Amino acid sequence: MVSGCKDFLDVAPQGQLSSETIDPATAQKLVDGVYNSLYLGGFGPDTHGLQFVILTDIASDDSDKGSSPNDYGDALRVDNFTLNSSNSNVNNVWNGYYQGISRANQALDKIALSASSDAEKNRLLGEVRFLRGYFYFNLVRLFGGVPKLDRVPQASEINSAEFQTRASAADIYAFIIEDLRFAVDNLPQKGDPQTQTGRANKAAAQGMLAKVYLYQKNYQQAFALSNEIVTGKSGAYALYPTYADIWRTPGANSSESIFEIQTGVNAACNNSAVNLYVVSQGPRAGGKRGWSDLGFGFNTPTVQLANAYEAGDVRRAGTIIFIQPTAPAGQRSTGTVLWDGFRIPSQDSVENSRYSYKAYHSRTREANCGNNDYLPKNIRILRYAEILLIRAEAALQTGNAATAAADLLAVRTRAGLGAKAATLENIWAERRVELALEHDRFFDLVRQESVTPGRIVPIFAAQGKTFVKGKNEVFPIPQPQIDLSGGRLAQNPGY
Image 1 (cartoon, one colour):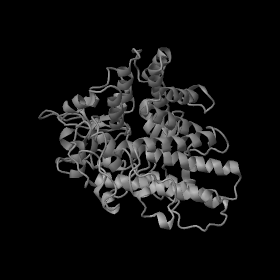
Image 2: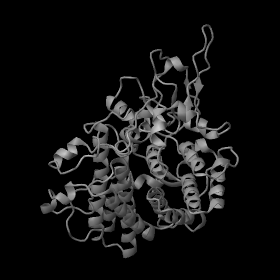
Image 3: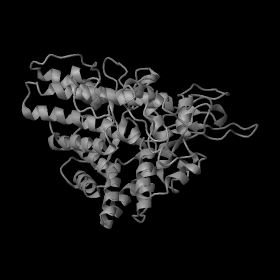
Image 4: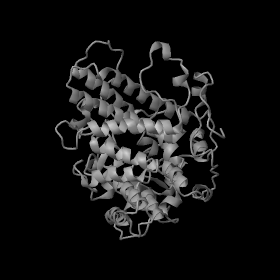
């Protein structure tokens, strides 16, 4: 895994290049710089760190802010739907994704100047356009219509209205589809000699495009693309046998992996990972410590998520760290022992009673550089199980109930469960428990509300939260971005 990804973990942002022909190595470094945008986190520009977790998991019904009650007010306001346009999370995530888009546009602008063959240039362009399409997919789901930067602006265009006003969500989706279509047509299959582990390949592009079409309710295309991954020549994909191990070192880049953010420790041990992703979600010691903190304690699974699993579902224990209750007076609690042997004494030793197991990275059994801010956990963006669930939903919507039932059963069998009727509600329920705490639930709820109106408000009301239809489907356009545009960026309704 390390040797497969180390080439693009260490690339600094690229500076200005001349308009002359560039060598293939420089073209490759430009592409690597786009991949590096995936690692943005911390408390600045963010694409997959804590702030992205806040806008996806914590905003959903699957998890609460966690940590101590008064910690990180901006995250609490997202959790309770009381945020406004000055919220730091929305501004930093906006900045993170536009940094990625800027790097992508610079790479696309210069790859054409490479001395590489046309086939090699198209492969590089395909990787970059896959990433740009993915960046815009997250932006449009977070904010709705956003400015469409489809190229590097000329000096005379920097302050033009074209780049400082919002394109419609429909226009952004069309742009995403165009980018991902190019990637599908030009990226090699898994196992092709040109395909390096961790880089986007044809199946990654097909899977991402299938997901985009699912959001567009284009079920025929969603089915065709997901079906190609399952039955076609996209590579040998399969459900990884042990669910809990998907998020541990053995499961990195496994048969289940369609696309994941690569991290790891190379010979230089340079902390190549998403800043604060792991430590921000780790168990946080409370007043009666007796052990060392594993993290900040954010993104704690809700009771509703814990109760969503059926009896015997192995995914429950693979998703949620349950902290054992404090023992009665005079008795000693055995505590919670994690998979690597680490022991958390009891509930009175932590701030919260549940934590994300999918974000846990062992300090003793998995490689790291000794820097908790950069624990090298690969982040799974697209898995084969989700491809099966996309195909199941698309199949059901297009009248192919047999395929929908087969795909649903395949996912449930790995979880230790039996068959269940392939209804839309059951497929959606399966998505929830299969993909819990993988940063998709909030987007799923909004999408499902557009298919079956009336679902989303009661879901949040059951948690004491007020979701306002016509407002909370998206987040506010950050006020600093409106100010930078001279007021030309229009705000979302209700903010």
